[in-house]
Every structure is written in structure tokens, then in C-alpha cells.
Image 1: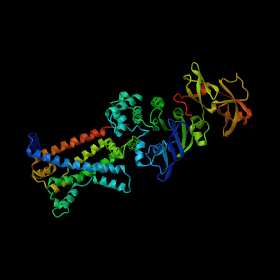
Image 2: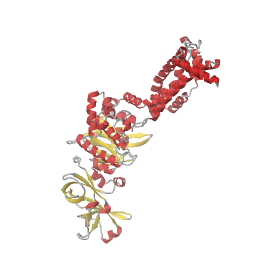
Image 3: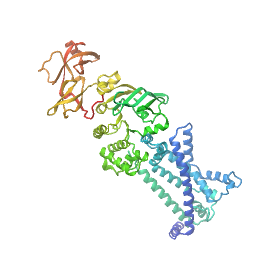
Length: 232
Length: 370
């Protein structure tokens, strides 16, 4: 019991004094996961919307693939990104393995299907006739898509949050492609794993608290969104 | 084509959905400024016809013309679509303020701030919802929402307005007040309107012509009184109801009761109307009694008209007797009285009905187009 209490005490001390190492790790985490989420938004929202609005053979199979992708195991993503970026791999010439860039790539691959799946569902959940109503108001196809995305902005925000939440708390891929290099590619999750295995519970708990706070904030926003109603 | 120019003309229009023919209109013409009701049961093709005319559904065959010009290529679709407006059964408002909702059609057309503001205000006022201006579309009632949807359509100053059962999801008092307002707005703006409804009283009140639809086809089209009094077949008859529909004009007014001129004859009815107003009388056949002799004391009915029996149709338990009293009239009588009065086609009789048994529809808005 002492171990835990002592750990928590030290953890708060680290947080209050803004320990440079803890802060550095936190900032890098936000940077890597934020960039990855941004990339996943561009690809996920556009593709998700396109799939939601079109009819083509094999659409159901594609949708189920996207939905499967929402639960992509990070270690599998880590494995394939490592293989591709390996010195002798197809993308080895980029020389980005064990850099934050590699982590961004891996996290973007994890977050994209999540954002895509939620975007698809969000656009499909809009009233069936809304599309027709927008066209009947004289909109071009492009204007129609833009208005639909604006109408689905709250559930799309949920997609953003879910994507970000998925990658900020992910550890498998980050440690595989980032290498957990101190001061360079060490993020909240990989640092927590390492400090725990070393027995440095105070730092591990401090990092854990930061992650928990982020999770709380994300869910707070998600809950707000879920409680809102659509107009008539 | 003398005087009133046709604004929409459909030729051989067909729509197929999943292999089934859901709309089949060999010909339909809509005159400028007229209000045409599409009436029929669910699945009759009313919505499909409106959506096809709004360029939201591509016809699988046929074509239609707007002011004599064929609506065809994708380019003219957009240009045409910006000259018509459609309102759906659900208000389908955007998740923003009432103001932004009403202005959305204008914004889509690239119009800028001050101009939008002016037109939006005008239309909010028109529908009596100026006070909702800043409210979120999420926080207004169903009736208010439908008013916003109508104002949004009117803001684009459409040359043709397509209304797809815009009142059917509203409760009766809300519906009534919106109907009254819409009637006067349509009269004021003289907008050509196609309105789908399954409420025949609504159709009777609003429209210059009624098109009766079923299974994707138009079975009959004509002035309300014509469609309702002379249904072409059993289906139309069963749908538009059994009342005799008599359009007329108020010529005398008393406390609570009034007299209207119906095709030159004076008919007394009960209700609050104004002198000179157009009204429609709906008379149910079971309220019309027949007699061979005109005897004042035996009947408390105030309307008695001599007439000739045009046709007698047996309907099982009773007979349907069609009369010509200077205006058409239908009466239901039992087989027993048919024998007692020895009625047959061509016989002269006296038809009577009480002033209180007439259902009066006020139709002040516009004169029928000739």
C-alpha cells in the first residue's frame, strides 16, 4: 500500500513542478497523435462521406472492411509498418523507422478506419430526404456534400475524438516503429510501459494520470455530443 | 393555349424503381398560377411525380418542359432546380438558426448578407414567425418548423412550388392555422403550386384542379367539383368520397344562415360567411330525401328542388339515385321506398335536404381559372 501512496505523492509532485521530462513526453505524444489524427480526418471524412453517398456493387463488403478496420490491432499495424520501413523494405529508402514520423504513419493507419467508419455512419444517419431537400433548394452536388458534412458535424467530432483517443492510448505500434528513444520518440504510453517494468512507479503513475485526464476530457466532449438532439 | 400559358408540361413520363413501374404519366399540363392538388392513397406516386418534376429523380422514359423548354441536361437541371422549390412532409431543417435556415436557399445561390436579411425578414413575417429569428431550429415546435420550411422555400421566389403533404405530420389545430395562412400567401404571391395530399377537404379548399392518382397513374384530373361529382371509376369515387360537391357564391346573408347561388338556384345553408364569397357545399346522399309530391308541412327541410332522375344504381342494401335539379344531386334510398314511390329513370321528383346537413367549405381565396 505504501508503494502506491508514495507513487501517487511523487506523481503529483512531478505534475505540479512541470517536470521537464514528463512535459516533453506529453508534448511529443500530443504532437504525434494530433498529426496522425489530422491525417486520418482528411482521408477518413472524405472517403467515409463518399462511400456513404454512393451506390456501387461491393459496397457492403467495403463497409464491413471499414468497420473491421475500426478494430485494427495496433501490434499488427506496427508489424507491417516496421516491415515496410525496414532498411531493406519497400519504403526503406525513406529512413524513417524509429522516428516520430514512423509513429505518425502507424497511428494514422490505426485512426483512419475509425474516423472513416464513424463519418460513414454519421452521414448515413442524417434524414434520408435531407439530401433531396438540399438539392431542391438549388444546391450543386458539391454544395450538397458540404452542407451534409456541416449537418453531421457533431457526430463527425465524435469521430475525431474516437480517433484521437484510439491513438493517444495505443502502445504496441508506437513502441515497435518508434523504438521508445529517450527525448526523441518516447511518448506517454511507451514511457509508462518502460517505467513500470523498471519499478519507477512514481513517473509511471504521473504519466498514467495525464492519460486518464485526456481520456476523461475526450469522453466529456463525446457525452455532450450524444446528448444533443437533431432539429425537426 | 389562349391567355394562360402552361408552365409545366409532362410527356410520356415514366419512372421505374427496382424494375417496377412506379410512375406512368402520358400527359400532364400545369397552367401558370394554378394550384393543382395531387390526391391519392399512399404509394399512388404523388411523391414520385413531385420529385421527378423537381429533378430529384431521373425519369426512365419521357420528358417534361418548363415554359416550353425541355428540362434535360445536367446544366439545365441546376438552372431549372433554382426556379422551383420543394417542401417535404418533414421540415428537414438545418442544424442552425431559423434565420440561417430561411436564408439557406439564397446562400446556395451565392447571395450576400444584407440582401439575404431583407428577403428572409419578409418571409419570416409572411409566415408569422419573425419572432423566431434567432432561435435554434432545434428548439421550435413542429408547426413552427414547417412554417420555417415553407418560408425557406418561398425565400427563393420559386416559379413553381412543389409541396409534398406539408401538413400531414401536424396536429389538427396547428394544421388548420397553417393551412389558412398558406391559402392567403398563395393567393397573394400567385405562385404556381402542386400539392400532394390525401386529405380531400384540403384539396377542395386549396386547389383549382385536382388530379386523382393511384398506382403511379393519374386517373382523373379536373376542377374539384367535377372530379368529386363525376368520378370516372369506382376507385376515384371511393377515394374522393360520396358527397355531392356544389360550388357557388354567397348572395344573401342572415344571422347564422345564408343563401348561396348554385348554378342559378338558391340553396340555403348554415354558417358564418361573407357576402360574395365563394363557397363549396358538400351534401351527403343519405341526407337527401325524395318525394313524388311537394308537400310543405311533411318536411322540415328548407331546401326543396324539383328534379329528374337521371340514373338508378343498385348498391346492395340501398340504391344510389342520381338527379338533375338544375345542379347534380345524389340520394341514397332503400329498395322499399324505391318501390313505394315507384321511382324509375326519367321520373320527375322533389329532392329535399336540410340547411344544417350541408357541409360548407369556404373558398374565398381565388376564382377558378377559366
